[in-house]
Length: 599
Image 1 (tube, rainbow, N blue to C red):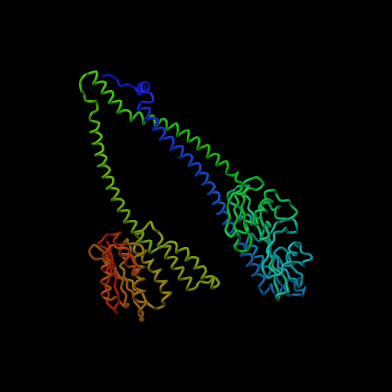
Image 2 (cartoon, helix red, strand yellow):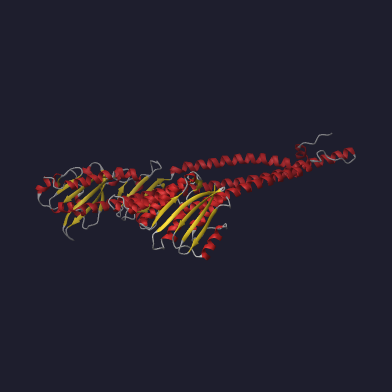
């Protein structure tokens, strides 16, 4: 048998008219053009994404700083007001007897401000000044103003003409440390100023709270007051007069008027002294101050250059791969033509018709596809069965989630502490109720184990009953009649609580007499029957029939009697359709919920 001619034979003979060459060029263009377009798109998209992410990160970081400052300044202002309104402070400011001052009659003020400086680490010191006696009490020293070491706050106090808290950056003893002082004047009446409370925030400690977490040393953070003065910066030298500002900050001053007049936060790229910066500004809600972030764009230009280099490298790599792929595809698509040409040449040489070798390839292809189809069908059936099982589990978990939303637990704990604080740290009925509910929620949050021993479910139920007993004092009593043999049986979690809640809310509560709820259990053949019986108002026959009919249906839960339907569906999903709830009731005599469980 003669050998087939090689690809190069057809290229040399037909050149660009060759089907192989044409297919190769078309495939190459179809591969290279999308790759080039994709590379260009990826570069531009990456550039935009980086700029957007940097801007968003700066915004998020600055919003965090703004929120911290709002809370911190508001707390400081409230603290200064609190100290100034205390009776001891008022008496001290009005006291003109210097003997009382020297003899330490106001040590309670010392204790109070010392406590606050220990609680708030960012507070360096607190001064309480009386204009009547010229004395200063602080956590650092107590002395008359003339002998007091730190006096640079006093001119600012003299200029204060209202009861509102004012603030200024300054140096203690004109050297160190750098502080931000909040001055809260006190008035005997509208015009008679009697003293002030001065709270000094350590700017270094403040910087630890608000400094950007990106670790970039050129990332500048400023706090600016309503007069465009710098209240805070990492470089403390920029905060005080007599120091020449860098050129980029002088250029920034010219833009501040426009930026501070904007109501919405600003983020964008600006040029300052010939260099591009990412500038982000947000106003504080506490006062007319603002926080401003400056980050040189050159911090990210190297990343953009790297992206461009990688894009070009990938484009060249894809181009090389495109040539190889185009060649291989062209060879593969040209193979049938080579076979036809070879057959024609062979027939011409032999003068007769012959069947080509490998005539059964199509049969193998069809049989292979049929086999693949059968295997695919079997895989689909297995996947469908698996997904059906997952769907049932997901539905069960969703129903479980209606009973025990885990997020409420943390909120209850917060409310619990708030209730305790209302009674000076002593537990009360509200905090006991919230604590019990929180404990019940925590016990129900374990989503990994939907089944628990019955004794654990009894503990859950008792937690709920203890909470209801606090709310409805002597309104009902509970009778437990559960054989010990049932205590280790596995049941669904939060099975009893909705049933007890239904008995209390719909049976016992509307009734005027004291209620009795009996929980009993027995083993009958191959299953367990639990009875939750109350002597409440009962259920009308028509409504009872509707409820029992609904128990036999698979339906989504609705608002009325969601607890009964929830427990019923979870029982059926977990143990099968043979198990669940049924109700027996007579108006005026009470209701019994029967729970059928597997043994």
